[in-house]
Image 1: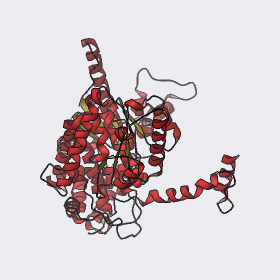
Image 2 (image 1 turned 180 degrees about the horizontal axis):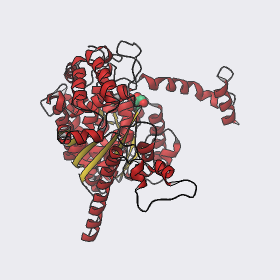
Image 3 (image 1 turned 120 degrees about the vertical axis):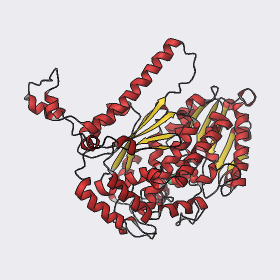
Image 4 (image 1 turned 45 degrees about the horizontal axis):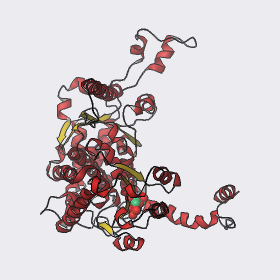
Length: 541
Ligand code: F6P
């Protein structure tokens, strides 16, 4: 496999960027080419992608596709699907795609479906709330054992069992779990202890606290009220949990919502809808494997990420889901993208001479518009923006009359108009002359009209991608998440990095263990750096 910066396509892209990319103007590109939207918009299962408001032309795309071919993207992808140990630092296969392969297809199929069937059957017993008595489900987990279910359950609110409430406890900060527990009764509560390793400090501390609370409040039958989802079944048993749904070391934490870690989702939306979620992801897997590179949406998005990061020099990408249910999507993507591709050495351990993962950040629309969008429009950085629009709403049913329904539908139209207006404003901008012709013309006693107009002008030519879903359903959400997974795979494959390990989180864990005894009275601090020692002294005072 050849690394991206050693390819002919990389050199061609550099030349192309200098000649045409740096000065590329979106407004001129649309004026020149009436077919731009249709040639730069693409269909994937459940997701329509408009790439036409990006800083690229046919030549850019041509060179980027050459880059993908030269880097052996298709061979790398096929190796992942076939179960090769592409996570080389941990000597593991990367097979989250096998978790959503239909029965009879894909590696490890029998064991995958055996656990899936058992877990979904068990989820249905919890959903029978008259018999189970469960009203609250508390997922205790962090990172990949939290962010997926925490993002998906509110996103699919319209499909969630109306008699169940879901809580997600992740932080070792006791304010997290204490707020949740203060509202619960043991007899009505199910705790899901979710941890791939079953050793993670935060999760173990919260699980022990939950068990102590359960017993102190008179809870009985721990076996019925605590369940574990883990690859470390022995550790769960040692904790005293008898019901466990397992998974395998070839499922990375941030790719694990499709297996036992998805148990809170399965309890929330039920077995049939969970299978729909898997089917949507599988449909996207097929698209990623089968669609030609030039119409392959995850590939194109991954290539765009490389184009912006390595040629335009952008450092971040903002993601704004225009669906309130997707409010946790930016946090989910932060782990998926930055834990996967935030790497500084290639697969051979050589320092990268180019940048890898950008910062990924965002807030749901329209909230973000009233916070950070100012910077997207008028700040000094070029920040590619991503808009996620959902055409038709899925409001939960809570006895809506016609008037309320029509008001909510109007709000949906407002929401979509806002999303479209933002990408339009980013692209079109507003010249100083246009600002001067605004009526009524804003005035300031402190400056002349021309100066004020410069404050009110927008440079425009700022790129954005719009991803459009028809409805947010288990199927379309599954497809969307898989789309992001494969996009991250694509850019990681081109950068020549291992997207599936996360050594960067280890050092802090080790140092935390070392600092813990030093924080108590009498703990030694003399051998620490002066800043840490002084902070400990203040904390102990
Ligand atoms: O933050 C590091 C990490 O290992 C993540 O990759 C993982 O998702 C998370 O911790 C939780 O790990 P576990 O599921 O083993 O508790």
